[in-house]
Length: 178
Image (cartoon, rainbow, N blue to C red; front, side, top):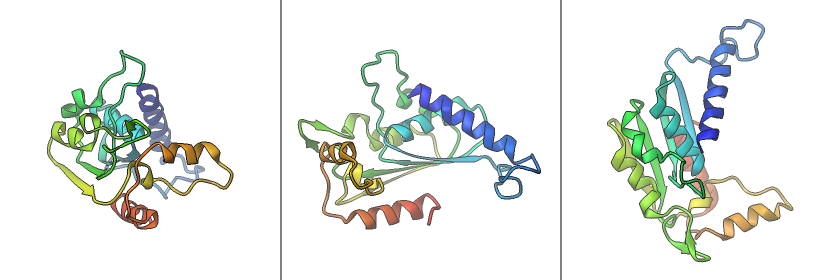
């Protein structure tokens, strides 16, 4: 996750640099003068929280879709929750009701590592929203036809009765998408 966070920093640096280059397609199209906003799901949300906590550049806001603070098999991996209070950016934590529920013997977003823990450790201003009737993987777009791995990943997480299209539509509104 630290590697992913470093990649996010590199992309943000590149975008900020491109906004000043007249020949760049981003010139005049992207405004980073008020900072860069970050949006992520699951481990991507954790990585964004790490980036915001490092304070390497101005982060305008962070929207976290069902963040999970796992370390995987790397015991040296930084827990985002432990440094989250260092972040000064406003944060929104959107969680799923069924993320902490077990499916196939494990939870995709365990309560001890999920959005409620992120919110509890965040510095104000921060907001938390739990979407009832939703599961952790329902935030994602539909899997491409023939993607066996995608279907397997979804099967590993308990899903709720809320239609995926409704959850994704709400998530897009929350993140400023369309």
